[in-house]
Length: 106
Image (cartoon, rainbow, N blue to C red):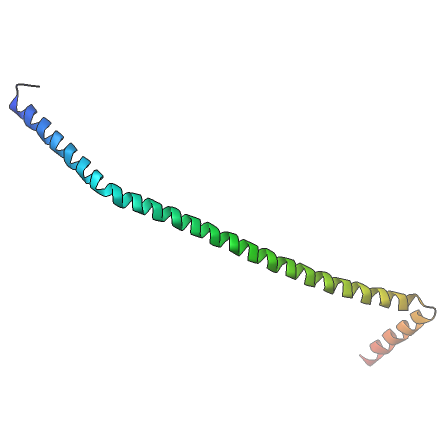
């Protein structure tokens, strides 16, 4: 150490400050550990809720896809029957006559 009293005082203050900081950190370790554990639990809970929400959305999407498939199949059948009617002999004249009458009425 130095013979200079001011350097000894500064060293004593630094040591005292260092000791105070170490005591403060040591006192907060249990609380910090509990906070860390709780944060981990919250992250796990959020992840679980996110997984459950993703699964619900996926089920809804599958239901909507099935409904749309049924509707599309129904429309395809209706269109096929209309096309079949139009292919029949004489049906083109009937369609043309209906279009002409619609124009005349308008």
